[in-house]
Image 1 (tube, rainbow, N blue to C red):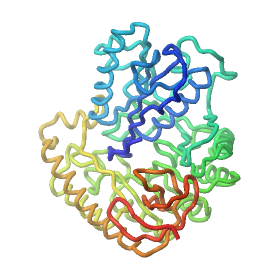
Image 2: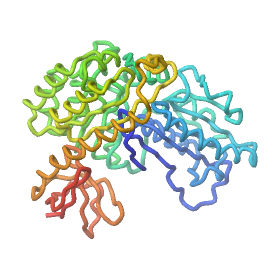
Image 3: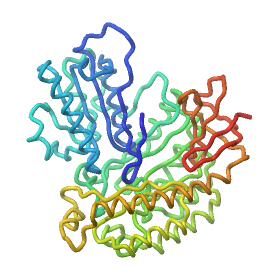
Image 4: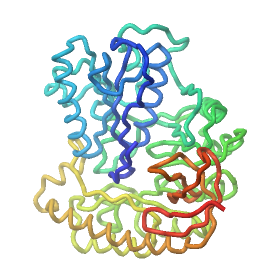
Length: 454
């Protein structure tokens, strides 16, 4: 899995798991390719479990599969171009094997399984809206087995990964000017608390150590359920899961970050000292154009409140540069916000107009549009500012001992994260996967720490 800085979350490129060498025929193999946020990764993990549950095996190459699914992202034009490029590859497979079934799934498809790309893709057999695992599964030709239930809320790994994303809600009710997600994923739908607690229990029982609760506006979870439970209540319920080591959640919205939620994160020992709270811009006029619903002053006050309760909290955020109407003075205010708050990590993206959004209409107005080369310059400027800040923050870890949950091996080194989500590498002959390591930091940089096990 490759992580790339992308819009308001890291973009994840998930390639299919390599199958065991067996005699499974092509007619019983699937190929699943995913681009997008953590929600897409979670959806794809569920689909893989479901496909294997009805007798399919994964294929290493699309030409080796009779069922090809591309889980798409539409949050930026570059993600769509990546998927369209992959579709070009599978089109050739369709010509060679006409019986191959091709499905375009995810945010390039609307809630009613409609896609503006359909006329350009006559070789695609089906278009399926985001998170509709059951619908994709139903399209798989000739399953060997039938699932006992039509829905698959839980992934039944024999051995779960160390860290697992669990979606707790789908869709979004916000009307941010730049965001296409509400148009593609629909309105918010929260999953029931009991269902989520049971899913986490089963995943942890299969070996997972860390759970990250996912939602587009995760701290708004529960407002549409009977009794209007809150994310704080869900955290308390999930926190009680036996053998759970770490608990996180993302992505938050400043308007939904309540005092009770902050207090709950600070009080529960398994909740990690890290919060992702997108600010998107450091200028009030731009925030108003973005329809974010808060001011810079309100955001900074929220940060101060969080740091008062949790002095060691690691804060990450998301910023878009070049939104229509962002002047040079407005951009300077965003630079100043980074200098003031000093985030541990910032996901920075240049504005990309998405069809159907309010910002796309604004971009069409010459008086508001920001030139592409200027967007690139502003993005690079912010990246340089944040690199300097992150370098200074991480330098403070030199010589310190940190607790690292080890996720696996990477290029001969063990790779894991601290409670504050700092990436740490170390060398050791033993297998540390899924274990907590006490690591003394010997080298620091803006993006990762290196150390040795004590």
